[in-house]
Amino acid sequence: MKKAKSLFCILFFFLNISAIFADGHAKITISDLWISEAPASASVLVAYVKLKNNTSSPISLTNITSTSFSSIEIHRTVIKNDVATMERFSKLEIPSDSTLKLLPGDYHLMLFNPNKPLSLGDKTELIFYFSNESKILMEAEVKKRNINKSQHNH
Ligand SMILES: [Cu+2]
Image 1 (cartoon, rainbow, N blue to C red):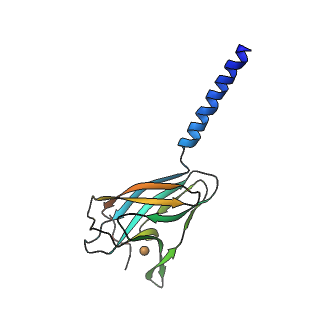
Image 2: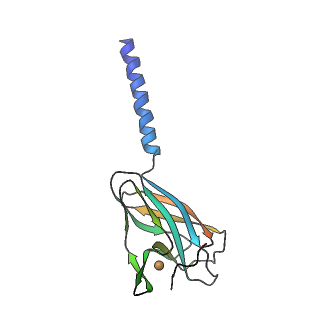
Image 3: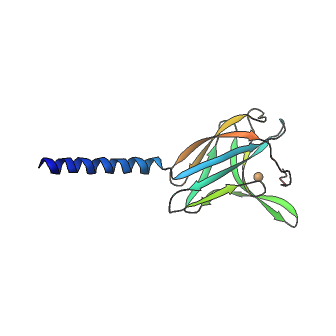
């Protein structure tokens, strides 16, 4: 009887451990979030990020907010007849077990009306909302865009 009880305790212990690991393994991992340096007078800034879906089903980015900006939109730069234009997306799907990279010249986040000028090295926080109800707060740093070949006209 005593043996059975301790076996149960061991089992319970292991079950708990696996529950902790399952919880600690985030469904979405956000990395390399940065804002492209812009003149102090800029009313629109651009941010890039990597979104990794660690689950076996698609998850969508549904909204982004920040106290530093009036609004944030998901855009994609598209070249039509040699002219760069932008399309707006209401959400962005991250396929299962994959990483979606928002990069210059492709998908990006548009940050409207900064409440104060942001210069190189400044940091601010963005909150990402996903279709699986998760909400992730991330720090974004203002960095220099290393290659200026991307045509981003506003
Ligand atoms: Cu844009």
